[in-house]
Length: 307
Image (tube, rainbow, N blue to C red; front, side):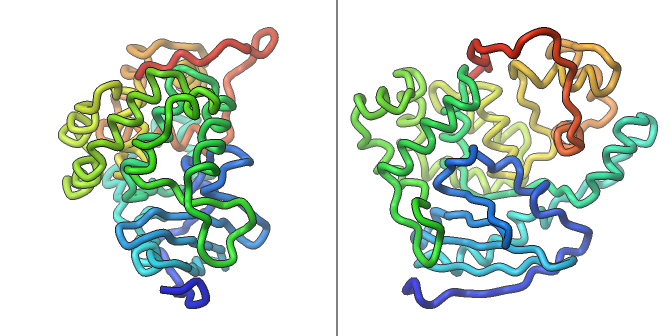
């Protein structure tokens, strides 16, 4: 499909939808070459099985207008409902017993758990975030994708690129990883993931996450509990996967729910009333705008997230 032949559709979700809250987990900083927010909506590049695509989404009342360009436009358009939370079923999820969550859930009612259907893309993004600050991870993401990603098809904003193919990731020389700020451990893990990309994408057939999916993701050398959870949350739409080993999350959960910081075990205990929806609770807390108290100057040391 040529760039001059966009596909268009209008998605009318069955429940209220907030485009920004729903797509928030995909944000990789202001310089992200794969996703940019503009007043008229959001631009996102999509590496599809049929080829590169550029997708533009804009909210008009209760509906979403979607336009896509490129060889993968049809695939990208077909994926819009799941990208925006279609199939995300909270079931009997109930937070009425916790005043903070009850109010936050009401205020973030348009937040849905997305499912990108792109496992390698979500895994490499998570690998870049292992044991470094978000700023460092975003810089590496921007540098390598701008260097090795295909120019976005259609009228995408200047500088936008498509996430590179698995082959392209495997071919990046060691010195380019180093120049982008990616250490040898993370680059080896990213290359290992790219080497089994087809197998990673097949995990989508197993549904919206779960123990089997997480186990298969962790079979990649260098991918641990944290990275597998971050991948499954975004690629599969897993409502329960928790980022165990995160530097910040346990304290955020503790301050939000009981007014004091906790560790991973404490976080698991606090979230135990919502089995199957623990990641949903995390998203509600994050989407509410809650921030843990700051004591003293901002830390400058790297985040020590587990792999």
